[in-house]
Length: 400
Image (cartoon, rainbow, N blue to C red; front, side, top):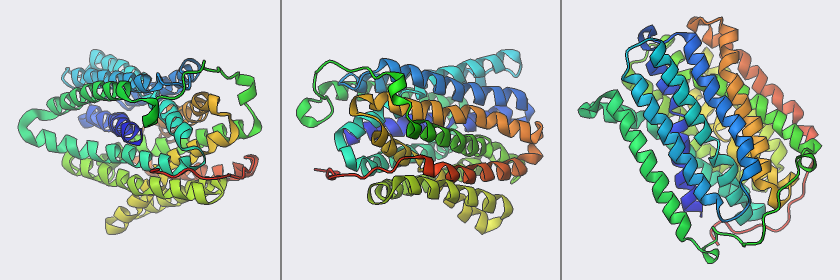
C-alpha cells in the first residue's frame, strides 16, 4: 500500500504543482495578463478545495478508495491535455478561457489524492501514521521537484514545450491505469483492501470539534501564505532574478527538493514529539526561510530556498497525522477533506489572489508580498494551543 499510494502521490503532486510553471509559460512575453494568471491559479485551487469536500462526503473508508484515487489522477492528466492545447493556441481570449477551464479540470482531479490516499495510510499504520505519511509525502515532493527539470529535459529533445506537456499528460493517464489495476489486485492480506463491513458516514456536526476547526483554520492561513509564495515563485524568478527557462526549471526543482527530506523528517518528529508544536515549528521555519530568501542573493539565496522547501512542503505528514487524533477511524476521509480540502486547499485558492492584491498587479512588488505572507505564516503558530493534546499509545511498525 505504501508503494501504491507513494506512486500516486508522486504523480498527483508532480502534475498539480507543475501548474505554476505553466502559468509562467503563459505569462512569458506578457502573452497572458496578471489578471488571467491570477484567475487560472485561483480557480485551480478553488476547484480542488470545493471538490475535496465532495470527496469527503461521497468516498467511504473502504476498499473502493484506491480506484477513486486512480480516477483523480486520470482527471488531472486530462487537465494537462487542456494546457497542451492552450499553449499551442494563439494569445487571446480563447487561449485564456481554455487555460482557465483546464485549471478547473486539473483542480477537480487533484482534490482526490490527499483525503483518500491519506486515509488509506492512516487506517493501515494507526498511531505511527506520521512516519508512513512522511515517507509517502517525500514522493509527492519528489514529483514536484522532478517535473520542472523533466520538462526542461524533454524540451531539449526537440519535442518543444507543447510536446513535453503532452508527454506529462500521457504518463499521467498510463500511471492512473496502472495504479487502478494494481489496487484492484490487492487483497485484505496485503493490507490495502479493508474489511467489507458497511461504511459509516460521519455527520458533519460531530466532526466539527474545537480541535478540528482550529486545525482547519491553521491549515487555511498556512496555505494562503505558502501557496501565495509558491504559485508566484516561477514568475518572481523570471521577473526579479531574470532566469532563463532552463534555469527556471532547475531552480523550481531546487525549491521542491527540500520537501523530499523535510517530509520524512517531520513525519518522524510527528510520531516522537507533540505533533501540535511540530506544526508550529514548521510554520515559523518556513516564514523565516521566506524572509531570508527575499533578502539574500547568490549562494545564500540558494541555501535559503532549500530551507524554504524543507519547511514549506512538509505539512502533509503533520496535518494528516493530527487528523486521526481528533476524528474516529471511519471519519478519516471526511476529516482529511475538511483539514486538507477546506483548510489547506481552500487557503491555496486564496493565496494567489492575496499576492495580486498586495502587488496591485505589478510584478516588481512580489518580494514585498512574499514578506507579508511570511509574517502571516509565522502567526499561525499562535493557534497551536487551541489544539487538544493527545497521548498516543502503542506504535505500529512502518514496514512490519
